[in-house]
Image (cartoon, rainbow, N blue to C red; front, side):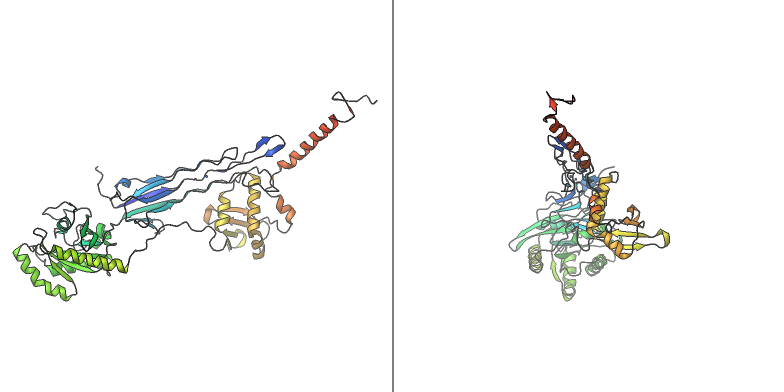
Length: 482
């Protein structure tokens, strides 16, 4: 099956790389029995505007894009290598939406050409970064965090100053070809144009871009014809030009009826009410069409519309139409010099309260629920297979004030405490240490190996002292008793 050359909407999953785990290593050096510990890092998915692209076809039928993971830290205080970012190049005017939440992630234009749509996970700290005066050489490191994963829809909305709308074969493509260097496909049958065409118009009055919307018919906003898929391409336009075929012989068709039908479809699509309108009564090179244009022109002008009888064959009226387009664009640019676009920004980790505690359930099945960016991140970083790492987590939670707050709310030892939302939370039995005092609190997460090393060092020193004492004879202990 052939892949289409023009694609303006795609869906796929993006997954950022997981951060590498920190490394818990210990260097062995003379006079430093537990010297120099170490660390690790992760990769993001980024959208970036490429001015040379006009379609999203590269991402057609691609179900997943993933960034590589970060590498774990290694010995000798060496950080793990960062996972490389994956850059997805897209046309200007691409809008990214999270399909699961409905959140608008990014709207990419020349002014905002880049956005991160899936943030890479943080790398875990190695034990060198976790050392302290009471924890000289920690025997644990922090785990790397998972990268973001989301189902994303990319949607292309053509960036143009003027949008041409009208029934099939009204002459929109011919008009673009006549006023610019664009060369769209032109034929005498309906729905010749299957993709939006863009043209750049250069005049003494200014330079602007023009785009047409293929296949608008009655019911387009409900999915009939091709207009449902392409109406979005005029959402960014500064003004709309109705191209009306004055030479059609279809029953039930006339310029006023055509205008009303297209306006009804624009209203049903929504968001275009404030755009100025111009009317191009096309094909006046045909005698009957010229007469019809002169007949309906007064009524259209009575509606407050600027009307221009034109012919793309002999060029009649095109200069006046182009100058009117340039004037409207210039006025709109003065009113709105730059339309603000939404670009994804990382949310502050510590915004708002650092944590919140609530009591969920009743009877013996109740649980104290702890939510907050910091405690949830700390839990994700903890290796629960390492008792020292668990003790370090307990220290961090206590310093944040969670134990005090639980006691203040009436929590008792043995109560279930869940950190995180839903079933993925980590559940502890509450074992408060704040009441016991700082001595016991400081011992949680402390490196017990230091207590094992000190006696060994002391014994070596005692042997050295004995070697050089008067009780030694030629390096051998004197056990004669003399």
